Image 1 (tube, rainbow, N blue to C red):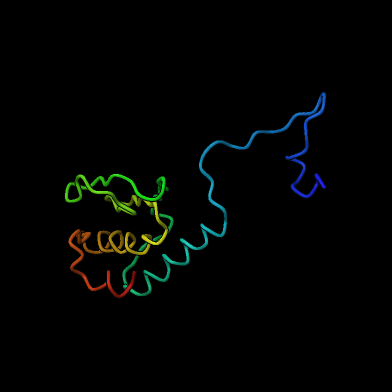
Image 2: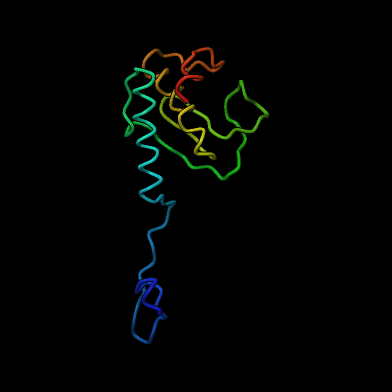
Length: 124
């Protein structure tokens, strides 16, 4: 029964060593694949160019975090885009919305902080 979890979970015995996991925050493949797929869906919907690998994604403690933008001072965010390529996420459901900010900034130089572009309604 102990082998069902893998050898890493076996009790250590004299003379054996257990390798520690590499430190850091790790995201499983399913989460990563979802972000990648939704990025592709958003670029397709908006018609704007962007590269998933150009975005720096920071996972923040849920359910939200203090916003960084001056226009959002004193508010709490579920997601936030910070120029030029940083996306903070406490809620995965904010991902497409923040990617629209990123895509707008990359393609037009205007991240549209007031959400005037119809893409926010149609593509997020």
